[in-house]
Image 1 (cartoon, rainbow, N blue to C red):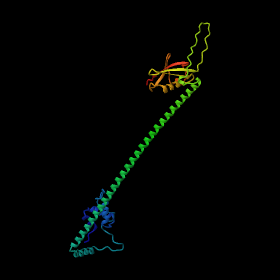
Image 2: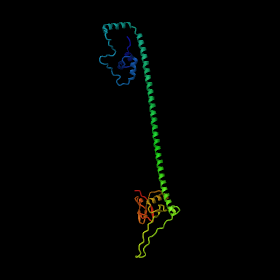
Image 3: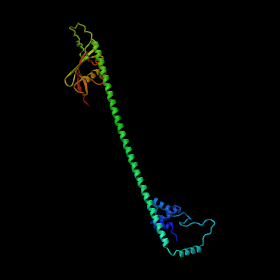
Image 4: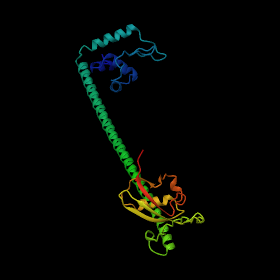
Length: 299
């Protein structure tokens, strides 16, 4: 009796359900195709479930060709008995069966090695891809950090440049004011320009004397008392704003850079930010005045 593919697969260690399913789903094309299917689907959750053939089909049976007559049962029984008589010596069939099993086992082992090699290559390739993606991500993070640092450095450089330009504009304004005062007083630095002495309003000596006309001054002599006890003296135009005096103090003071406000002692008055926009003449600082620098208390 010939060894069927189903028997060979069962002798190789596969369960009957797996063997039947593999042969049926590969169209009974041979042991190799069935083994390939078993190797690919060995981890399927339903691989050990019994195979249910489509309705009207029985595994291992073939329909007779169209137009042929099915062989009678008696004829099949005689053919089996005849085959049994001729096959009393079963050793050749057993050896052939053993060789076939051996070849199938070798084929199965080869398939298993090929699958392991393929899985190993896939694992190595996945690891390479993971490392490559990690390196690319690290490079992207580094690039972002470098760009951020460059942006911050450029922002600081721009701020310093703007601050430098602002200071330069203030210095130029002060130089222009000094040049105008030098030109007006006929030489010498503006800080040493002759200061017109304060003119007192004459007091009537008698009730019959008429009061003198109030004199208009176009210059103002300001003395500034700093926090360390030193003082600055400068002459300004009567129509200049108090902000010009504050700017002059900021650029020439040597007592530190603490915030401050200006005040007068008599009459006592603390000048506000709104007063900075008013001319010295309007604030009553003409023809001369003493300003005191006081620390500004942070509220």
